[in-house]
Image (spheres, rainbow, N blue to C red):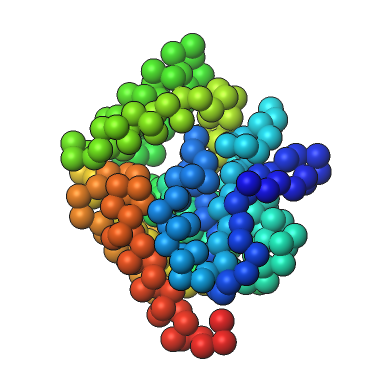
Length: 266
């Protein structure tokens, strides 16, 4: 792992120095860069330049008491790319990381070659929006770890998901400081590009898990992202990049190949 200081805040990341094109992997809420382990290995083997970040508040990055908005995360990611000389990159985010990737693509069109969102609630169905406030109130209480465990077990996993992996995920997520959990979830709640008409101009792919309740209103997302590519995995809950990495990797590879054909100089 490497780290850089941005305005006194330590930002940690894993990165290779060579390869083309540039891929930036952005983990989800209460996770870290290791949640893209299968993708890092795969795309490094294909000679892509890969960076996987620990967002501030997560993993080995600093965990200050502050507001953790999607815009703050996106600005950190863009800053890291600038510092590492990544002039153009594809931003690949899982869950909340997809919201961050969307923001990087929107705020930094000079930097974003494309965006991949993996089961991310960028445009939420009404039922999903309604459930956020009660869960946030639970996170603010003394039983926040139990609330998170129940949410992940019941809303993010399906019966066929690997139970050992789920236990490891729960251990990781419940170890994140409570102030980070709450503020980052508030940032996720407040991130609503559809209501503000915040469109994405670069190429984009949405990969859905096979959960009973969709995490994203894809039709609303299509209104914001012209030409959005869409795929869905078979037989996996929310953490599909770990559960069925071959399916996820294949869709990302095809998306990247299509962009290369459209712009051979990219």
